[in-house]
Amino acid sequence: MTTLRHLVNSPRLGLHVLAGAYDLDRPLSWVAVSELDDPTPYLEGAELLLTTGVGRRFDPDCATAYVQRLVDAGVSGLGFGVGVCHDLVPEPLVAAAERAGLPLVEVDRPTPFIAVSKQLADLFAAERLDRAHRELSAMQALTAALVGPGGAGDVVARLARLVGGWAVVLDARGGVVHTSGSDTAGSDTAGGETEEQLLLARRVAATLRGRGRHASAVDAAPSGRATALPVGLDVPAGALVVGTPAGVDPAAPGLLAFVASLLTLDRERVPATGDLAAWARAAAVAVQLQLTLPRPPDAAVPFAPDARVRAALVHASAEEVSARLAGHSSAGAAVGSAGGGAAQNRAGRGGEGAAPIVLTLDAAADRVTLVVLAEPADAALAALDGLSGGVSEPVPASGLPRALQDARALARRSRHRALVTAGEALPTVQELLADTLPAFADTVLAPLRQAAGGEVLIETLRTWLGLHGQTVAAAAAMGVHRHTVRDRLRRSAGLLGRDLDDPQVRAELWLALTP
Image (cartoon, rainbow, N blue to C red; front, side):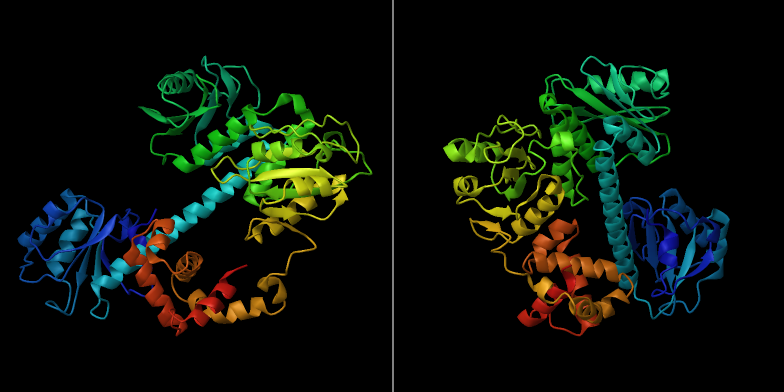
């Protein structure tokens, strides 16, 4: 939460606190500028109001009335610009602000009001970026918990700790499946939730019925707030309900939706595939989130210990991949599994002739499918001809995690509708310049990294270049106004001393910004 204190502590502004120094932790919504004697009709609350006092008297009575109007409007602070109409902040105004508990800051003449607005915008952007990083870290930790020994129960317990409240998973009848603080299923008291919390959870979950898999519901009680999302693909489905105590910020909707998806993935697994399905789900999520891939237990690998296999990541649905393999008599039988499970190995644990594993990694429109092929795999690869993706070198069956990593890297290089194998892949520019690129990037980006708000400028530049210099698209991707992006680009160009319209400059910056 960005507060007045963050703005006051910005060294580039040089703001001086004259009153209300004990109450600088007020949240800020925006900066407003007004010379009106009564600006409150144009305010919403939580603003920092900037004024130079043009045409106004600040005798004790007028100053007291002016400050009281701002306090009643919920203003977070008052900034007074000196050197325009007043060389100093009028003393009656300082005294009135101190009595009312309204923070009052002096804005020196060298600091234009627009600089205050820009700094607050940068603080908001940095806050959003930090929130996104923390949310991604939380998602990675929750994903790791799902594939760990605690499974879904551990996910629910960790989620409760992350939001500072409680969490419970209910089945379609309102029974407790998992609850915060425990991986015990089927007990209404497993996690120590109070009866009031369980009643609230069941009440809000009941409002989801008949509203589809993408619904959500919120209910509030004196003790706090509860949010419910459906879990599972059944109709009616179960529900994830997360509660936060009164006074605690509600959990981020994106994080809750992610956890509901994780729990749905766990619930819809294919039980018949046992250890193999468990490893396949863990590998699928790890590939998508670029986590360390888990090593499959020996019992989970449907190939002989001495078998050699290839991993392929293919830009196609599991159904299409399975149909191609099944239609190619020498490629082995493959049974696609749409729910995140893996195909049955009907040929038994063997090498040549063992059925491929076919696994959907992405449920989006542009699906990515993992295929694990036993050697010799020439016939199977021929059946996949025309699809794009990456194929690893043959590895022992126990080396599947490393093969998946390689296939993922090769799939990124697939720019045409053709599978890229390890022997065909050309090195990337980053690989060719591996020894010199870090030092080059440090030199090029140093002016941005040393500037206030430099990380925001770097992230904006990376997003903008990645979207081919499209300002509107970059603004949409970052959730800011296009003018904000343009302002950051102008500032970056000034700090770098480079023309961002120069193709060579863009190429050099992209190299420096690409890991």
